[in-house]
Amino acid sequence: MGICGFLKKPYLEYVDFGFAFLEKYHRKGYGYEVGRAVMAYGIETYNFKVLDAVTHLDNLPSIGLLEKLGFQKTGLIDIPEMQRSRLFRWRAETLSGERCQRN
Image (cartoon, rainbow, N blue to C red):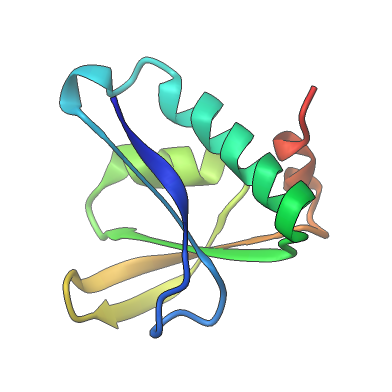
């Protein structure tokens, strides 16, 4: 299906939240469900208060998923393996962080 998780990348200030899914699993709600569960795990287990995420400038489905998960556009960043990308940040103190709590 795909992957979802956390990495520490040298060019990001905070832990990177990332995901990738095979095309046949796109737009079925799996990204949101898995993303929400993985974020809740990171919050509960590692006490994450801030997460970063990056995506290609024109990757509208990923941008939409990050926003649905509570990430906010922060700006642009030049990343060696991706070139110019859009940077998103999630903060635990925002109301949107409540979306990631386990039921």
